[in-house]
Amino acid sequence: MMDTPFRLPPIVPHLVVNRGGDAIDFYARALGAELMSRLDNGEGLVMNAGLTINGAAVMLNDHFPGMSPPPPQPGHSAVTIHLTVDNADRWFDRAVAAGATPAMPPADMFWGDRYAVVHDPFGHSWAFAHNLHGHQLGHDEINSNFAAFKEGAMQ
Image (cartoon, rainbow, N blue to C red):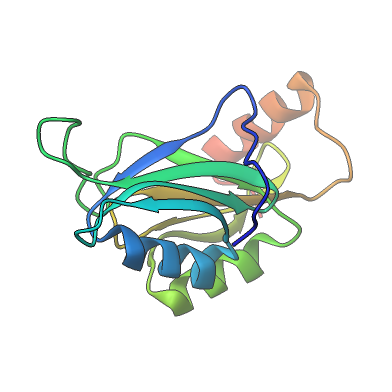
């Protein structure tokens, strides 16, 4: 853990979990998370932890009844955290090997990314994507690809 101030960008996901210490360990194995800060309550619960995942900040704490809604059940999160990565297949495989549940195996998508999704054991969903073209596709090309996708012509 670093001993420097953990500076936050303008928007940061803040995950509520059960078993915060286990979640931190899982995110290190599955997503290469680095622990930047951690404050425990003295009773084995994480009051606040700051992580970086692929260069992005993520906050985490254990669920404290009455302070926040309970964490989602695995596969039932209304939010997916999207990570732009160097290789979606490799990130997907590492997360699954660490205990994540595959939700969408890696596939080439009509918008120009290789894309995959997993559900972690703590109720949160993660998407991994890398661009297949070296640039973002324009709206016309995406719309054309989507039309072909709907017709089943996407390879």
